[in-house]
Image (cartoon, rainbow, N blue to C red; front, side, top):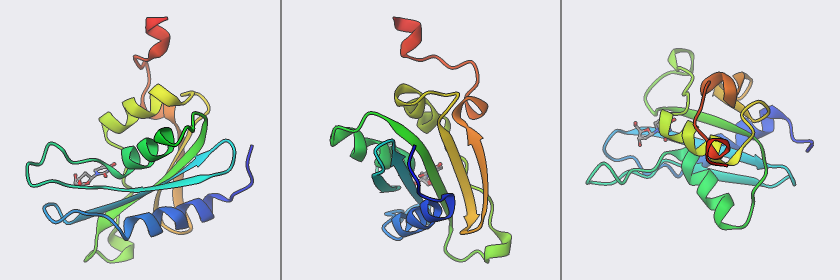
Length: 142
Ligand code: THU
């Protein structure tokens, strides 16, 4: 258990969003993934002219962490919106289905927390199980 406030993790997600590469959709996403040993991995969405190689911010954060040997995760904060939308008109950006499936590969669905924010102090928290019930995971193959 690591002491980093949810507000600070959301701030990290906003910092990650600054590097979003999304010239096609213009939708910028930032994610901040907290490992059980207290490290934060930031990720942004990275689009591509061929569209399908696009990587979401959440998966960028996960792949960065996993590629550096991290295997245990506590929670992730996610922010996503267009630049030209006023703060009061923004929506929560929930992770796409593909990202949820990647999360369930590496996290305990009952425990892993997904924080979706539309402001530094305006966020909702879900367990991964709430976002991806009845999932297919490595447990099905063991
Ligand atoms: N996107 C994310 O990065 N995360 C999400 O949870 C939803 C969508 C990105 C993908 C694409 O670059 C843009 O947002 C529009 O779909």
